[in-house]
Image (cartoon, rainbow, N blue to C red; front, side, top):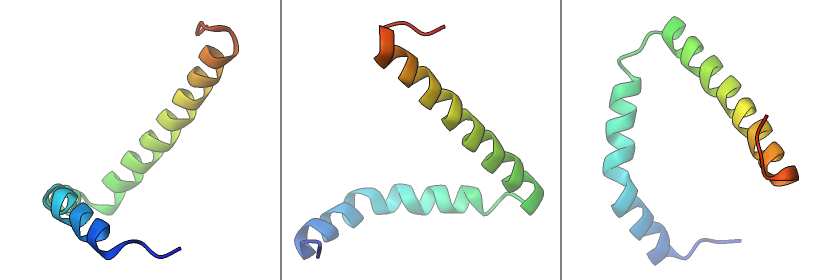
Length: 62
């Protein structure tokens, strides 16, 4: 599948500035800090997936 060039250009136009700011922020962290951030986001995503599964199963989280 090939992205429409106009659509891709629009995505970069809209999200490019935010991406550059996030990249600049990320560059301020050292390898050890990046490892902690990566671990946290990985574990948090697992927790969120579990919570979403619970809500989808019975409408309530435990």
